[in-house]
Length: 131
Image (cartoon, rainbow, N blue to C red; front, side, top):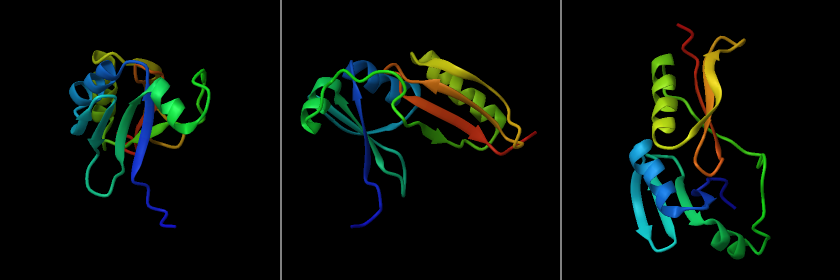
């Protein structure tokens, strides 16, 4: 088996809201947009981000759809500067996300914060730029 990841799929409660959040709010490039499914290209060498309706994703996996709380995963982006960390989190909030942890200096010398998308998925935005 090749260890290369081809896609990350998120189950979402409102597909139209999630599409708007990622496409307009965060500027992700829309790749496919069909009934019940949306995918985004995240750039050369990155997996795609796929969005499925929550109930349909649970049915597809053969599991109950009542998951809640911390899902045991977060997604990380590294925009390259403190200003871009703040801008990324600001764009997420303006698009309907929520600040989970305000961006601040880290003990290890970098700078980071967390936001959640409208479905509660956690995104860490970080940089090693300490200035």
